[in-house]
Figure 1 (cartoon, helix red, strand yellow):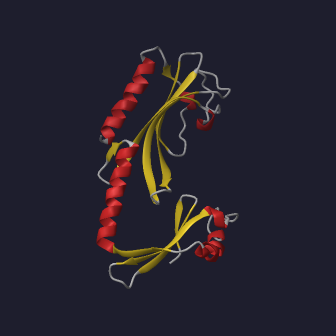
Figure 2 (cartoon, helix red, strand yellow; figure 1 turned 45 degrees about the horizontal axis):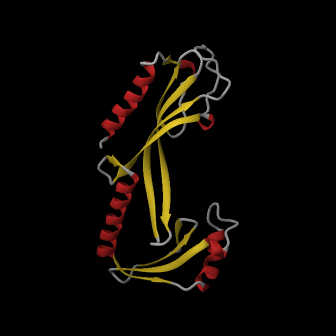
Figure 3 (cartoon, one colour; figure 1 turned 30 degrees about the horizontal axis):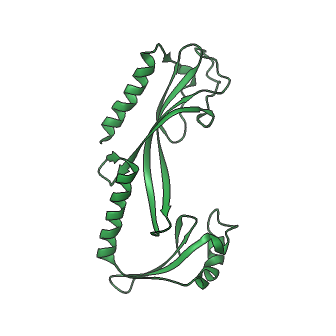
Length: 199
């Protein structure tokens, strides 16, 4: 699907609440980081936030040593649990996204760079094909080192952001990649689902 279809789904979600008598609660509608848009609705008793937001997700298939990165657009519907008065003109009242009681969350995963969205599985399949094409065209050879290499790269890993307390057991593998020109060689460390480039 294209982004226009996500917009349509978002509109339908908002319209479904308005059809039940909810109206827009304007005082709580200042922007938040990561959001594309949100609309706050109230029936006079509660406030419902319908958000369209973007986020990144990561997943690793340890068995196949594959790492996936996802650009996700999601429609989130949540009920306000903060002390906020519906239909108030007090714009200092804050409705925190992190405090919402989630009613529903529908995710759309970006597929490639052509503005298409689909399921997580469809995005993973596209990434697999992209990696396979890249490897076929650019990587001549790969070598995964023995476990002793993990001890050697541990000081490097401890210097990486948010890795100060990392242990050898957190390091999954260390590998050397030789590219097709044979002059370009890189070393990578896979740890806690993230890949770090040594050289």
